[in-house]
Length: 163
Image 1 (tube, rainbow, N blue to C red):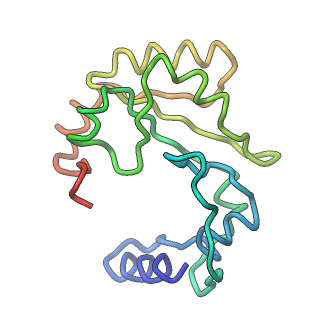
Image 2 (cartoon, rainbow, N blue to C red):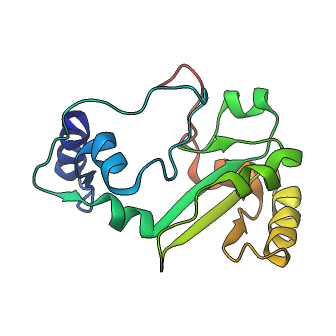
Image 3 (tube, rainbow, N blue to C red):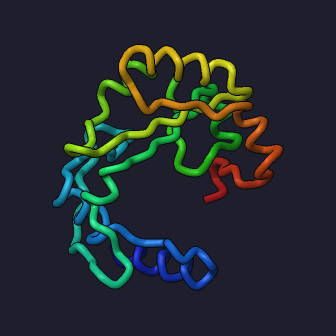
């Protein structure tokens, strides 16, 4: 909570006028929407603890959860570790259908947007089309993949050990 409020303030001071913190931080998120969209590496990880912090320029967890986006990087783990879109989750292509099925659905009237990314866009776009045909309405791909992302945005990739 406290760190998120400070981060949002710094971002606003540096021109990101829409930067907000989730009201109450992770504890506030858990109070409002439970474990929805919390991705843990270790399923036995403890839930968020602490005193929820509130302040100016916060947004409710329910509002955020109404239209949630997740970026799924389908590349091998070593390529993902070398550099990926910030916030992306690494999932093997064969594991993707089960991973998506395990995601909690958004609240009534909400939407979950899934963006698939790979090296060149070919597999990501193929899987996105297949998943849309299977009923996942809001699955998209990054045309041109990470290669196109790097051409367009350069060093905006995050690599293990740089954060």
